Image (cartoon, rainbow, N blue to C red):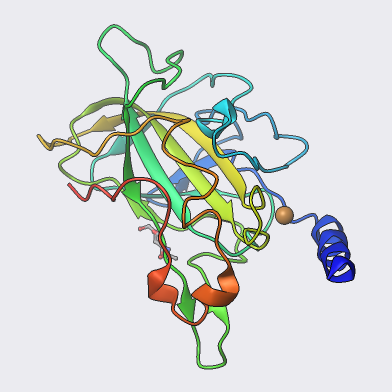
Length: 233
Ligand SMILES: *[C@@H]1O[C@H](CO)[C@@H](O)[C@H](O)[C@H]1NC(C)=O
Ligand SMILES: [Cu+2]
């Protein structure tokens, strides 16, 4: 058992299977450069994930704010480019937080119960019993859509990929994430929710975080992504 754990650790290091999401892609149009509208993360060089879902880093893993703001029409489809293949199994989730009145999207820190979820992904299992997740092994994250009824305005957009290959032990799940500065245009009069805070939304023992994929592979529909329900608009 110890031997097996050591093997897994060696494999994890050898594959260098870590990644960052420096570029937002809106309706197939990538941001012209890395970290332009996406806030540079602390792991921009190391690529390491966060293992403590209650750490302050779980909000934006942020080292700096970004120079620019991306414009996103409500209803747009988006994803992020990844610096490496997103090869670990696990869900991709997207959240938005509206900048409060008097705040600036270029400086606001996203604190408080202000985040709502707009997208998540679930695993599937093929006839050979092989599990896969949307966009797994590609150099981008899974797509999501900005609900058309999202009110127009300035928001922080948070992308997250949760790597679950070591998640059968507490503290084993790895969180890869980033936040972008965005302005949503042409939106509607929806009332997004439920709202959560980061940190706060996730606990170390949440069923989607402390989870044995060997069990999920037998019943993929039973996976419970952490955090609130998706707001569909
Ligand atoms: C993601 O969305 C874009 C833009 O709508 C689309 O061209 C692309 O096929 C989508 N990718 C996947 C994997 O669904
Ligand atoms: Cu890895």
